[in-house]
Length: 259
Length: 317
Image (cartoon, rainbow over all chains, first blue to last red; front, side, top):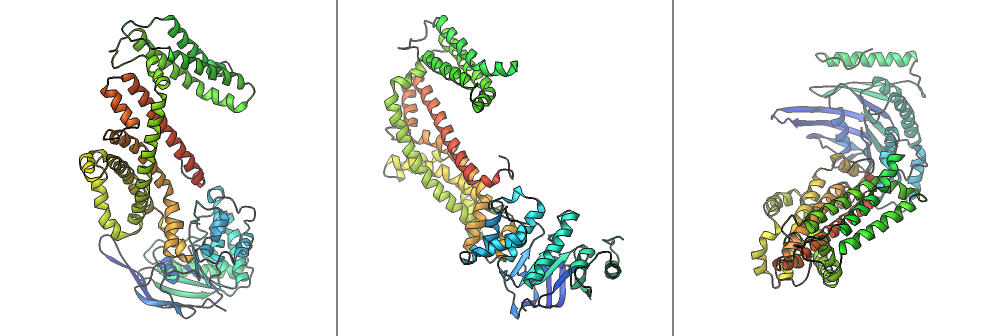
């Protein structure tokens, strides 16, 4: 199986406008198994998104390297799909053209036309091919953006809080859909989230990060069968444990989650 | 219901009033007589159009809607002409040399139509050549400045200094630089078009959401694909604003540019008639200019609506 991610002592700093330097990532080491679903969780400013962007190549690390299937990441590429928090569909293209965008950019659209159809169906947007993004709901747009990231058959899909902007009901539906797609495609997915429930519900592994100095606090394997039930006693145990670690990690900060 | 009917017939009533005034009130003896009452003919024509559309409105729904919404405006327009007619022709309250009767102004289109048509053709050609050159170079510079940091560094000061100077103020320099004054006129129009299009294009590109490019990056798009399939489409609304400014600007430049050495054209016509003190012709020319400018802008907006159809519901103009 493909989609093995190796993060080797990755550091990344940002310079504030006032000249002070903030370490967003401090020698982070991580090994993500091919075909697994991993969540990155932690309070704001703990470098989750920075780590995700380092894997994608959108923001390269200052120190250390990221490898995907033994290949060093030096720039963004289609083998590492990225789903943004906002759908970010191109408003001047209809849904079908948005989804086909990557294939056309790579000049392989003619041989992969069927894929576009297949993925439109997979995310449940059949019949909306000719609609423009502003005509559809936020959830539908987010589905389209998932299809756009997936249609190029990436080895890895990186999700940066892709469900953060959705209402609770749509959100739960989308969680199931993403899990369904993940199973079908047998790919590696790495998701940044703020939502402990979401992390436990979807992941094989939850990676808890702490802010300043940004590093990995703990990696928790979620050993629950699928499909998962949110009311299950083991589910709640995992959730409580993660929340405790987050509270501890937050020390001087207001806890972000309340029970 | 009553108000709706009043709105619908208001244009007819206003036209009838203007006709009655024009027939019953004698022209001032100060005002030179026109060969024929051309303003009256125009009023008759307008009345005929109003009556026909009023009758049609009972059978065709869109005409009904349109007449109800624009009826009062048309009535107001006719009323304004009516007042101008009373002030200028009937009472001669203003100096007759500078404020000719409407009969004479509209008579120009009848008596001078051949020359005017030639002028439109000549100006149109000049405008088309100048506008095309300016638009192509402006769009090109805008893209270059928008996407290339080095180009922006060297070009931006240049654009900022050259741009705000009215194109026509280059005329002495330009006239000596170019072999013919026609080339000079083309250059000045191109220059006046180049600036707004460059600025609005580069500005539009600079304001494109960064995430649009990041999405393209993660989908495996190359540099040129990102420029032509992401940057430019995203900047197109701003580019169109630039074209809009350029159109109005090019008309101003056209009129001035045609004063130098052109032997035909609306600007030349205006200038010539002004020097002959034939103000009826000047006004006729000005009205023609306004109509043409509006026509082009309407056309431009039609193109915009087609190209930027996706904007409906996203941005309101």
